Length: 201
Image 1 (cartoon, rainbow, N blue to C red):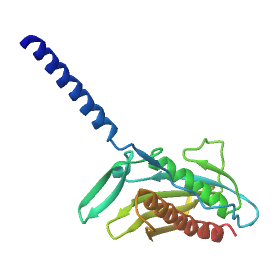
Image 2 (cartoon, rainbow, N blue to C red):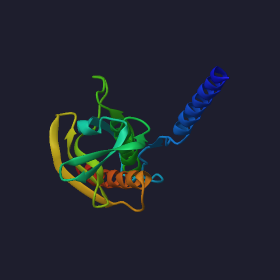
Image 3 (cartoon, one colour):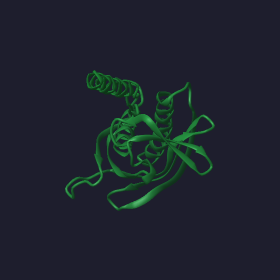
Image 4 (spheres, one colour):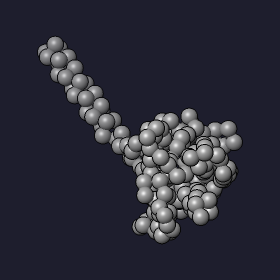
């Protein structure tokens, strides 16, 4: 009788542990994935002739080289999201959406990403060095970057700018943060497009 009770008790303990384990798995929050969005619609300037834009190099800081979305929670403290991640590496998303935005804002025949082949000719080359691109504790998304425009034919830099863009985060959660980051990238795209128009006249 004692051995039978011991086996029954051991089995009950085993089943209980299994159920607790399954409950723990069931309560694990699923990951959520986000991507930047481009400007809505095609706005093109209609300026002629259309240009071939060389895009890159575009560099982002190493702290963004991770799947998790990053926010700054203090002067010297950064937070990585537990379950909220980029769908693809954020540097790839940044370059792709920047190219789409500029194609919508300008009369662009083709966007060629760096590095391009020696046989490929671009009219204007855009180089971007991003210093900051994350959410802030004050409820804003920040985008800080240095960028240059040069004529590929003579490799001469004709525009060199610093942009620091801050966009309020409308709403709560990481979806709202990513929407604000997309808006910040839109604003940077507009600044760059204005300068490209000026040097392409």
